[in-house]
Length: 131
Image 1: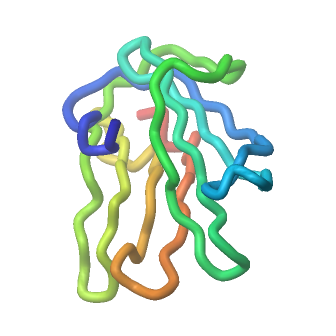
Image 2: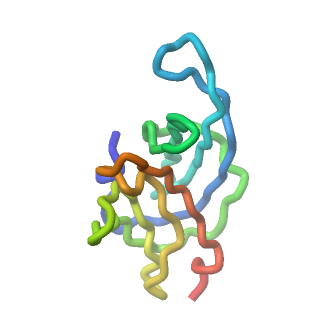
């Protein structure tokens, strides 16, 4: 599953952040990865960080149906869209925009994808949930 599969009008109703110890690509070692669980249209999705090394990080994968979310709220109508690239970096970031006030409530993915130093993005703006 990819972030672009989530694009469109959605109902956003929950989010939790946690750190999990997950096997890395060589399967011999585990590493701490930030995970964010979020609910869109009643379906839970989990975005998992790939910490890569001390300088780079990125989104490793997006899964459906994982995680038990404790931080739930009344559903908010959002537009899920991919963040536009700019003169400085290319992005693979899903943004949730509150349709009542036009403000970003959540972003997740990888910023600066075509550079030597990509970075993991998982930012929640709870103050933008209200009108």
